[in-house]
Length: 494
Image (tube, helix red, strand yellow):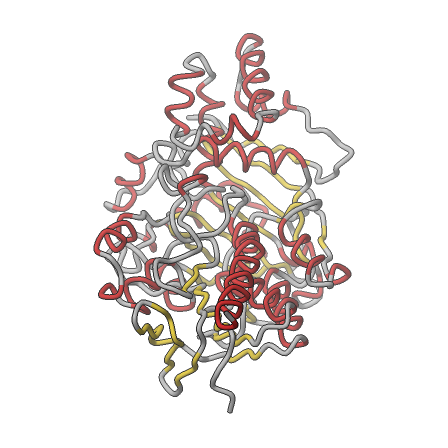
């Protein structure tokens, strides 16, 4: 059994697997260790009752120019990248109003009509003009202007720059910060929500045939084809350090040596558990402990006895559903929200082969606390079920089975070890929060020689959502690690 490598990658999420595959393609000897039975991280493929899907609904991949497509091109497997486009349904209600539906065509040649949305929001002519101007400014904002907003929250941006904006428009951006950036408007930088908005406007969103997990598995196949060694069900217990440099990792059964370790386990678990605080400067440990986690996510799986819904992605929100700090505190204290923001995907509408013929799978989810010990998940799931019954009564006669299947406990178990109170079940990782994004994003280089981070937590300032940013990190960290390996080799020759 081989025990020595050029690089060891800890964790087979999208970022870790992408990074490992790119390094193996460069000719390095790479070991990828994954604690679960298959790669994928939070996007891991799960199978149940004849269906295949993700753990929870995922918001979509840009049809053109996204990080997934760029990674597949760089790995030489662009032909395997197949996105399926289906219409997206936005379901919204004003405070005290009725639920209203708008279908957005996922067609690059069909421009959305903002007046349909403005009708839902109940805007008058003057408010529409203000909203159009603000939306146009955001849609065309330059990279320099976006970067200048790293220190400005969504709430601050509207308070300071657009105090006369319609409340519904502010609510829309607060909703984006909640649903897509997994945070609250007092903390999510406006720069990040602008990046998300521009990505949504510039290209349709699709779903990968076979699911997100298949994309990660495709990258793992490239990794193995280039000589990489993948070991699943291999939990890393410790990253080994000697005299300020990594020397390998220890699992419960083996010790593997390498002068370079790339951790896809999350910055909190890596520093506080896998390496250990004693190997870092106290200031750096304090910095890592200060990094806030993103919100969590919890969901349920509905199996319908016949196809009922037509779209691929449903976004359900209201003026009362998105969380600010006050609503978040109320929810985690056990108060049932007036409404919750719901993301719902129908994988079998995108790819019928992902389930038995004649049936339909719905993945339904809402935000929650990231803490595995949080006791309000059941309350939020019940509210989600009740709200879904109100919004989509047409599915009720055909619900064959409903399972609550994912929440902070499950996320921490398969993905991110809990090492601090209130952390472990994050939906994405380090929170999309002022001081942690853009120019403040944690560096992929750790203070320890040969130790790097990859994934949503570090290495990417793209502002892309979820798995897209994780893959972007993998693409950016791989060349950094490769150069480090070359420099290390060169120094040995001198």
